[in-house]
Image (tube, rainbow, N blue to C red; front, side):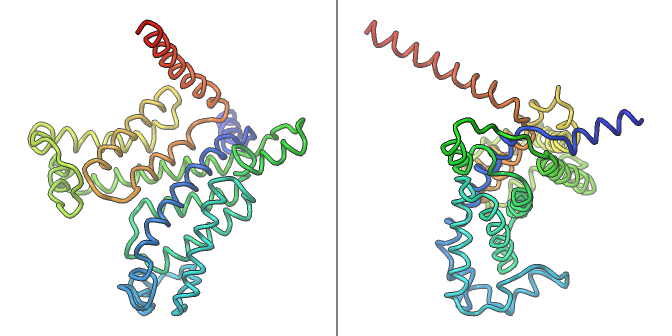
Length: 312
């Protein structure tokens, strides 16, 4: 028991390379930036008194629970636009790893304020963006894969990459696992998930339609296979994802699940947000082998192409 607690403490609060945090920061910062740019197209409709959600509607959307909302009493569209622009700039600098600590803190404040200003347009992916913004803000997320790191090496070519506390990365992993475990748990309470017909009903939400699916996907036996398969996969993403022998298979399953949802349903950026969170499960020492694998794949293709060109 004592040994198990020590192993957990080392895993949760140990030190290691900040590379994974840098990759997560770059990817999630980019996704948040794209999200903000997409929302900006309808800025007046969603964030001004002329739009669908005037200030008086905010309490109805947020409920009685107190929430951090710096725009709660702002009716001047110019102030809201400036707030939005600063948040968008912070997303860009976060993605680049420029002034990372300040950038991530501003980004956290910014997207929290925007989300609590207009909660009606959010989906669960937006909540994950906000949670990951918090973890990036408290983590040394600019210590690797960033302009901050590039500047440091440029000033001192002998600068080494210091080890950092890994607990923010572990919080990311636990957050993702909780999302999937509770999702599977709550779905299992629903009769349609228990009788194996749930995915048929979700397929009838035509307002979310994107691309057509083959007819057999909405018929037996595919409907119960997809229904129970989704439950099993989400349960695995909440549990087995921490078991290294199964981790990669579980994450690949999650990627395929979300790409399928992305193909069929128009839920802006949801799939890419969730897939981006999976990067937190990759340990920093694994990245060199991943990069080497991709290099071998692309180099072999280039070699084949060169041989074909020579023999043409």
